[in-house]
Every structure is written in C-alpha cells, then in structure tokens.
Length: 125
Image (cartoon, rainbow, N blue to C red; front, side, top):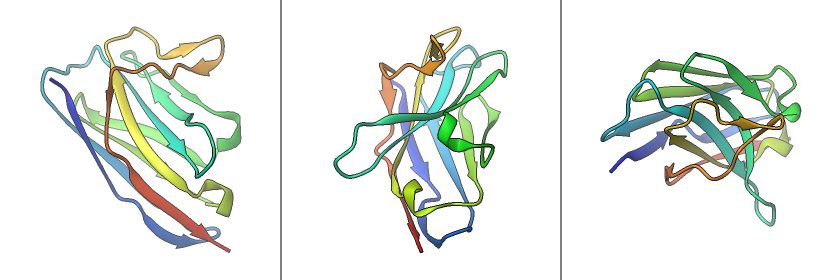
C-alpha cells in the first residue's frame, strides 16, 4: 500500500514563499504520476500541478507561473510556491497513481488512488 506524507506548510504573508514536500512509501516507482491538489474551506478540491513519468508538468491556470512541481526521485516530490496570495490559503494534498499521464482534456484528473493527509498553507494580507 502506497502511503504519502506531506510537510512544509505554514503561515506566510502575501508575497511570501513556501516549499511543500511529499514523501511516499510502499510500492511506487518512476512510472507513477505525481500531483498536488488544494482545498479551501467551502470549496471543492482542485488540481494545482502534476508531473508524469516522463517529467512533463502541468499547472492550473491560477498558478500563473508562481508554483513549480519537481521530484527528487520516485518517492519524494515538491511544490515550490512563490508570490503567495491570500487566495492560495488552503489545505494542500499530494497524490499519486500509476498512470501514464494525470492530465485529461487539459485538467488534472482527481481520481488518484493514493492521497496524503494534507498540509495547511495560510497566507495573510
């Protein structure tokens, strides 16, 4: 069973930066697609960024070049977030699944099999 643990969340002011990390354990390898999602109170969970087994990245429009997804290896990946805004306040989750690509019709699919528990990001103005 694949297990994921996020870290790196916290509270920052507008314009600040954070680097989230996701550590995986279990039967995961480089063929897995990796992604970050977020969910704000009262809102649906939304895809933020993804990276597939070939290293192809995809970002939600609201990222606007501020975030970057990267991976050290099959079991450790990150979301670097710059120029944070209060609208970025949410619980952030990492997810993974054994797909060739996590993007369908221009959007990050949401039916990943494996999810972390989340790490809170709070941006104050």
